[in-house]
Amino acid sequence: MGRWLAVAGLSGLIAIAIGAFGTHLLAGRLPPTSLSWIATGTGYQMTHSLALLGVALLARERAGRSATVELAGWCFVVGIVLFCGSLYVLALTGAGPVAWLTPVGGAAFMIGWAALARQGFILWRES
Image (cartoon, rainbow, N blue to C red):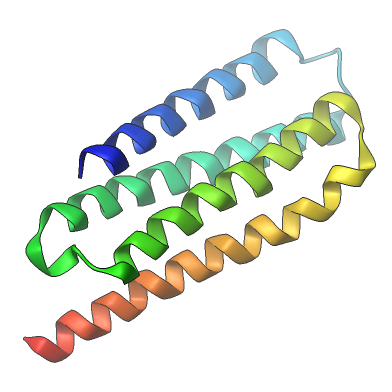
């Protein structure tokens, strides 16, 4: 539980910091498209930070200590780094080559949610 709770807290902190940086320091300095990429990145990062909090709570329970829950957590982390990170880099630098990382991160998010759904079906079947 501790690892996932620490990662969730750190990710949430980073999402808020990047959102504040984008809103207060970059407004007027970046084009609207770049600011929207930052807003999208921080929204997805915060959503998946909360999902990591859920993973932490599941990991605390005996029924949640499974490879499926671990897979979900790692997929959320990979998604945050690749999806959100690529949007931040693209917004701040305009480096187009990082854009190919965005859909890879999005796929990682979807795999993470599928893993959580699978764990839910397993627990449902056992009850």
